[in-house]
Image (cartoon, rainbow, N blue to C red):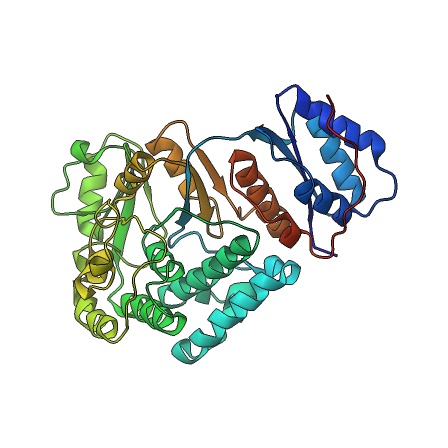
Length: 409
């Protein structure tokens, strides 16, 4: 049996959807939940108004039907447009991320195992063990954090891909852009892991003491005074990066809300310069391929060319320069993207998207305070409700067609 079951419902109108749920609730007797989910997915038209019941037991599913029948639950309406997948950056990691997903979904477990096996010789330790049970703070060391995020996000993307997710564009925040480049086909797995291990390891080896500060203001409102802009995440969301002394002076001069980030180094600043030559030597040794899925760059804010993605200078600048997330989202919106699916261990970029553009759907597939299996299933359910096509047979392995109530005319 699958670890979680999804029952998709749809109707021509918002008033028809509750009737669909109520009709199914009154009909069910002893059908296997997986058979019901399979039959609803492959045997019913996917209409404009949609709802999904997510559960691990008959009790959960019955309660979900009741919620949709009452006009609530996981429900909504299809939006027209294209889909982008977002890959989260450093800071979203937490001990235990992926453990429940690996137990619940063989595809995730296999993909994670494959990536961790490649990192084994590069890191000299068990990355999976660090991700699942680390109690010594190793996961928060940059040389381990970035490989862990890469492994987790690749595995989660492969799982979502096996359920039918096919993005029109990919984009990543900081190290998330390296994940985006890999899944789009720019590097082989072994080369991508070499890049990530070098990126994280060289950053960690730099002298500590840098500071990063989130500022609730636009770039134009901040007198930087020698401090670098590490990221522009929204119209009024900036991260600056520099030495303790520089950032302290800036922080004291600001009359807006600020927050220091929990980091060991001042990423995306001139303090990264000493690592760039060695990083370039690693990049020179990997082979780049044309991207199979267009990647919107957070370095330039536009669609990255194959020449850029194969350039050593581009990836050096990606470490040193500003993460232009707001520009990338603006570009995606201009290309017709209305759905954003965040692949990462926590919901970080979805809120940023909402600040950057209006009238979009932003869905996170994980939240650190939620059951991992249910958070993933609910996220994919919300993606389907917004218009993402899913493979219901793959979602319900072993499911069989059973007779269910017809449409509630």
